[in-house]
Image (cartoon, rainbow, N blue to C red; front, side, top):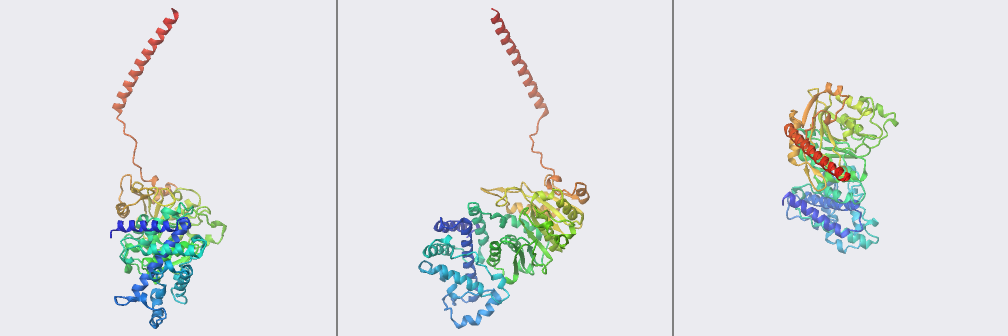
Length: 518
């Protein structure tokens, strides 16, 4: 099945499920049920494959839960997989009787608690805990009665069961990511809730990952300080084989729902719990993973210009992440706080690629002082201006800031990629060709008229540490070219016409005056 065919099948099936629950479940909440069910199906099938191995004659789903064989393997299985699912709890067994199960909603609730609870006391406990917290099977949003709840839950279960993609690991597309992208684009806006801030479109994620990992044959680990659903980390995974990412994927997320989605996303991409470390909390005020830094690759799309406590907390100016700049990011614009945090976690050989709001590159005050620090220390490798309307929820043309601690030249590269996009119905899109071209320009550091240039840091200093791409890359002259000789001829002809018209008017007036005297 082709990638496009898979994607179309997925979207059609999601619409089919939506029709079953329409009018009861809010668009944003509906996303949670579909993604939660996708996850439930995936870990069930993944777990079954692990237990059965290559034995085609062994059917795990048919075993009784009290089989002595299960207790014998349970401990080792949890150590390896991170969780345990009894045969009766498998997705295929639950969906088989979903229509006739009067206790479906409470059974599902107990199954989810059992899967989460199976990791208690094991190394995987924190990676499994609360995974299903947003899949509320008892919510009144599903219906006012148990029968209504069960009917809608059964519809979602059966709809996801009918997705025919074979083994998840054989998919040509990111099933979970595509579902997430599709649901956000079609439901988040209608639900009146924000979704785009938690999600970086896959095409932009590809570019960011490619920039952060360029030129590195092997990285110790990859980090996203505001990881959302984990899309950036997973794009990095797709670019590197597992053996090339030695210690795995690290991230932190402040929103509990999105934190759960990020962990699900790791599992759905068959990343073992021992290879990912996603933490819950405020990255700026309660940074986790401090013992795990530095990182060879950092990818990030932090929230644009959000408020933070900043200078109201006098201890932050002494924080080793922010102290080197000698000033804190403004309280109403935390962008540079995230950037300084990322820089602090970056290894000496590494590179960070961070989506940034354009205003931070030219505004004055504290932001100018932080830019001065970054330029003087030669940490800014490249600033890339992207096309507008690439992201959900904002039409602005954002920038990508690339940081490096191993630059050999005291120059900063500027790339105007604002014309690199393909127009789609709702959003502009970076194609694979666009991504390839931008990375090639980034790697070559060559000057390209109206597209790219490298500027001495001394010149940037004289320009008040302005890092706006438009200040250094001359835009194309799109004004209409005028042939001066042709213009002069047109003027001459126009003057002659005006002169002739005036003569005619004078004759008419003279005739009128003559007639009046008679």
